[in-house]
Length: 141
Image (cartoon, rainbow, N blue to C red):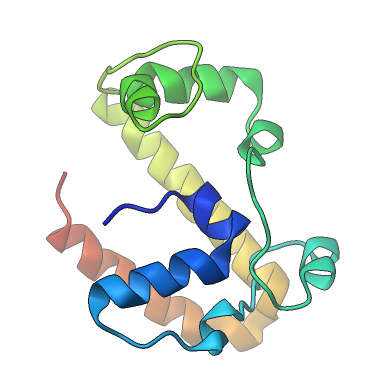
């Protein structure tokens, strides 16, 4: 079963019910509740704890150069999945670039985590780091 993120956020009840049915589970309305801790406070307040439509928000998240880079790497797959792209690239970024992106991602996660939770979140942060390292050993692409 395949459900796009945009479809899920556009009509969460319909698509979550379909996913539950596919898995042989009963649908529970509590599935529609979302804490959305990662969203900014204005978006979180307007959502009132519910899943909200999120179509094309990436266009304001990434700048034009970042979009070009992403499309040079995954544009072909994105087009196959029905996304509009300017280019249909399928390149493999070099190892150094991938490592730089991973380091930047870790840095942004760390800064965001401590801004949100302060030093009180240190134990949770440490657990997340240990889990990420464990996953990195298992998920080799």
